[in-house]
Length: 582
Ligand SMILES: Nc1ncnc2c1ncn2[C@@H]1O[C@H](COP(=O)(O)OP(=O)(O)O)[C@@H](O)[C@H]1O
Ligand SMILES: [Mg+2]
Image 1 (tube, rainbow, N blue to C red):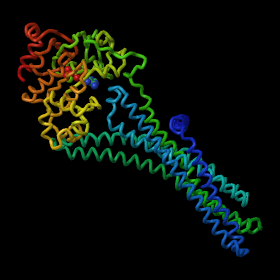
Image 2: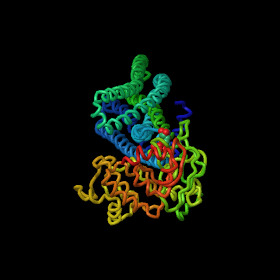
Image 3: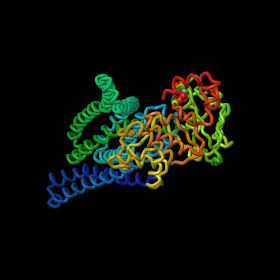
Image 4: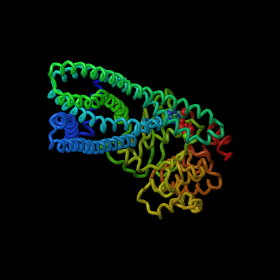
């Protein structure tokens, strides 16, 4: 990372998260003065201690000086304690703010942005990167303040005791700064590499744990373990590198300290011989120099903290700065639903980073309150068409209208409020059945939820569960069968009670028995509502007012079941091979 970038990032952290709590930094600064003062007092007190107690043997000072030493240590200890607590709290507050911003950003992001990165990578922003920023705000600022101040007062004391010796000791300082500068840069680089590996590790682990059934049946435990080993070794190596860079300052610093002390002793030897320095000044000076060692070392490596924190912040800011392609437009109006007529005019769409269009020149019209079905082979583009209606994606060409309003020009919130979607992969939260259904309407009463379940033919199995509606269903409903999960998600859609309903193979996991029950639920759900359904079952399709046959991204035929059976080869083919068989 370049120094310029570091500056920009640090400024942004300061302006966005710290400026409003600047008073806390001032407080910590004042307390840092206490730390520095306490430390210097300890060193200074050795001067009168040696002179008054050992040389002059003053009776009063024998008591007073030890008391003063206790006081100095207390001041240092208490100041440090309060400064640390203030900054730990500030750092945690900053962490919370950034985590919240991340959540807000991800929640508002468009589907493509979210899905183009593994969830594990996002999670590692929340923990790994954030911990680096926290370290910067908490330890970085405190060390910077207290160590700089301590160093300044200790050096002043050294000058006070003997300026010639002090000049000698100072010669070595610029050297230390030089070492530190190059270390900081290298550290920023390896930290970024380590963060990438951490992201991979979290992604891998989440896949490994989710895929445990697949691992067992294909007996790939060994393979998974080897993959674990590889990625963990990589992580270890990166951490080793960081550790290496971190401590590589130590020998340099130690050797330099050794050289300074050796030179110092030689030089004082000369000075004592000529009577230029007294023994009490010497002790005080030596103590100050010893005490200066810790802040020098800390300051020499402090830029590493800053570079690491900035590298973490850079990755987080990159996520925060990604503009959503599909976002709320506050200046537009709410959509006004009359009958709920859905229309596609010349719509084409290609998924980002793909060359072929998933759907081409789609022109369809679904009358308000009617049911239309999309049929076609898998991969034909049916789900793609459905996903354009709630604007999960925007068409590349053409427009989608609902009741003559271009959906790209109305408030996104109002658009989605009017749409229910039940898709083939049900998405459930690790919560109770009730909470999962109430997700559609957080204010729904227990009565409403039960009614929705009844319509979705879910009551029977729910009431057999140990805690009925309060049963916890596990991660993505792991404790339920596929059909049960689908009925829960249909109940959720029923509860939403929206005028437009999208069913993307919503009943594909149901056996014919529950299918029959759910069929009634679907009829209940879709009564007088505009429904676009992708179905594999003949019963659903026959009921549709209009059927669109989708083939390789295009609508090739439109009509009712009987019309299509008569006129469409593709439909006839689909019917005989697929639809009639189940
Ligand atoms: N997120 C995606 N990114 C890239 N290509 C996709 C994505 N989703 C689907 N596709 C591609 O778009 C085409 C249509 O897919 P889809 O609409 O899901 O088909 P259907 O629902 O009819 O089975 C397929 O060729 C599929 O590979
Ligand atoms: Mg599909």
